[in-house]
Each structure stands twice: as C-alpha cells, then as structure tokens.
Image (tube, rainbow, N blue to C red; front, side, top):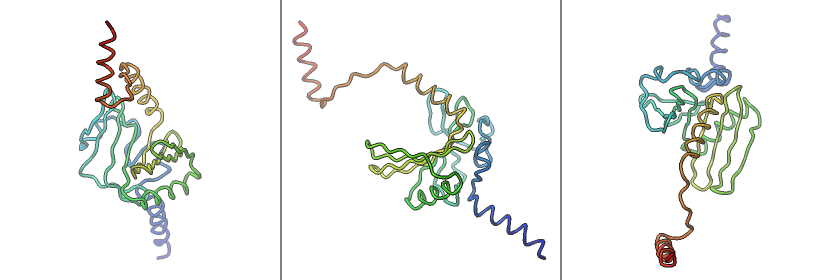
Length: 192
C-alpha cells in the first residue's frame, strides 16, 4: 500500500508544480509541440494572420492552462512554416501575478524594463534557447505572455526588419488633416 502512495504523490507534485507547462521542456518544446516543428504537425489549427514568411495560427477547439492558470486563447507563431513562438493574452491581473510568481519560482528574478511611452513593463526570463516575456501596459491594461524559441525568433525578427526597411517611409507631418492640406496648398502656391 505504501509503495503505491509514493508514485501518486510524485505525480501529484509534478502536476501541481507544472500547471500544464513544464519548465524542463521549454528549451525543446512548448505544450508537447517541439520548437521548429513543421506547420503540417498542427492539423487542427486555423490561420489568423501574418505577413511574408511569418504566420499566426490558433486551435479554436483547444483549451489551455499555463502554470495552473487557464488562458482564453493561445496563438502559435510560425516562421517559414516552422513553430517559433506562442502568445497568450491574459484577462485578469491575478492571472498575470500568478504566472509571474510561478516564473520567478522556476527561473529567478527576471530582467525587467519599463517604457514611459504607453507605461509598458516587460519582464523576461531565459530557459535554454527559449525566451519568456510578460508584458503589462498600464495605459491600456493589456497583459501578454510570450514564449520565443530564439534561434528561429531571431530569423523571424530579421525578416520583419528587412520588410520594414524595404518600405519607403511615409512623410511625417505633425499637423491635423486640415492644417496639412492648407500647408500643401501653400507649398504648391509658392513653388511657382
């Protein structure tokens, strides 16, 4: 009898600590999906957007729990049809706090940064090649949890930067539409 209790106790402890996402696996996989896995392994997933070689997918039939906290939706990011990121919007500050607490227990004190514009606070941890980020915007109240497999995420970021660099910059007029129209009319008048 006693021998049967120990395996159950170990299983219960691992489930309690894991909360649907085991830290030991984050370097190689995310929720049983291996980083770099081809899009073809995500059969029930639906495309929700993207651009160029970057695409985003969700599985509307799946419910998710991250660190013992239920999340409403989880978006999977693909670069060149390879899984490289996962994003979860958090609906409540208590969910944000609970996940942040779990991450601090596992990975220690995060690297933190604050931006005054938008009052954005970002906390970041590394688990092998996986970067975990939590963002909170005081201005909008938006909260986000992100996981990035850095070898592929670095390539995806470079691709996005190339796309931005190729686009010609739009003219910057710090004027209202009406004042901008008047200024253009004056420029045309004086160009003769």
